[in-house]
Length: 475
Image (cartoon, rainbow, N blue to C red; front, side, top):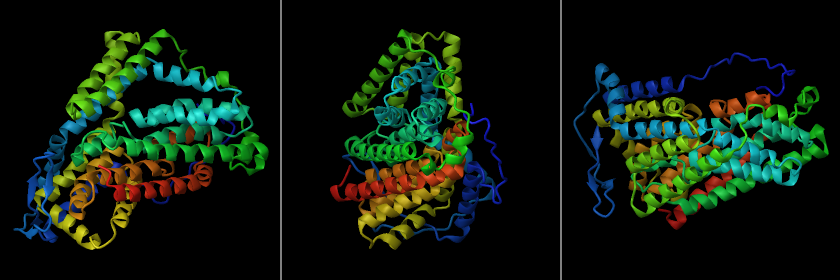
């Protein structure tokens, strides 16, 4: 619901509308097809390492081969072929999304977070840091983004009750989730997908990611609290001052109307959910679980949570389908993005691209190389805001490039992760961000004015983290 019904928002038609993500991917497929007629074909030799089972590029083995242009029909055939090649990742996203759909349908997540946030009413010194930390857990464990939109009205109502503004209430929910999403330690939809493509152990590098996550979250809390108390001291300093003067101040109880009350069944859901996540971690680190085993475990977790959460059989599987539907966009885009790779592989030009990139940057310090990867991922995130889709598009190129340049594949995943995560809080192509602002009644230009310094700070933290990762050789 809109917390500011009295505020009229005039939607202007953009002069240059942003193309649909799938249209952008299709355009890249067409460009890649044309390139197979122009770009010289070439290939590296590849070998499988016995110690890790990874397929790696043999440095210095690039050689020209016979041109193999891709035809018109083959260009479109690359899409279903890409779907087939990326089937394990596509079904992973859909099935895990279905499992989380069941968990959401129990109402446990809404009830638990709602109770925690409302319990902070009147405790203004604790409200912002605890709320942001709480939502960050959802961000790094299940990629919580759009799911937290429902809590924004509560955050706005609480913030206003304490003398803050709508920006503060929106930020303590959305930026908390964003901090965890950037950290991504256990996020199966971003880090999990990228690591699968890069052929590194699932959720490896968790200690380094956790340290960076704490830094990202701490800076986010500092930034939001600094702004909140500046507004409380002098409301005219807020970027929403004129709108706040006109806004209808709703109480917390009105914002809580659609939030279920926490009960014993919800508590059982949390017990099995977090117990399942811990079991997953054990399976990954002790038994060498990979994407198939992890998918299986998530299905079991979802079904058990649905049972203890009081859902009947039909509601459980309805929720499963609904959860999968929510991630259809991101799942199918993996297949489309894989189509780009199929075209370049069939046209035998992907290694030419990798060799050219390596040649242009091989004399640069490793720290500058990884920062270049980070900037590239940030730029692409504007056009491909789907984390799993971006991973499918870029990691097949970044992974062998890292091999040639002597960089850890884990570092390449980190560059993708931070490039994908940080800019989600400022780019207008982010569906979650637009949802937050819509329900809070915050115009995008006001949000941009508030957020850009935080994004700059997070970018610096990520840049430093990537340089450190290269220096210490994070694996």
